[in-house]
Image (tube, rainbow, N blue to C red; front, side):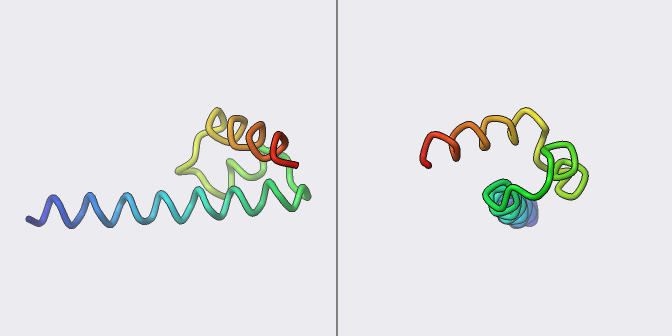
Length: 58
């Protein structure tokens, strides 16, 4: 049970970090390298994919 709760907490934290990174990408004021430094749980490759998806939506 403890493992499940820890995994759920890690997943929630990761999703929050992804949401933060997405907002930072949308603002367009920071490079992906800078965002990766601020949100280290999201990899640079993930950030590039997120950026590509966001750019397709606009």
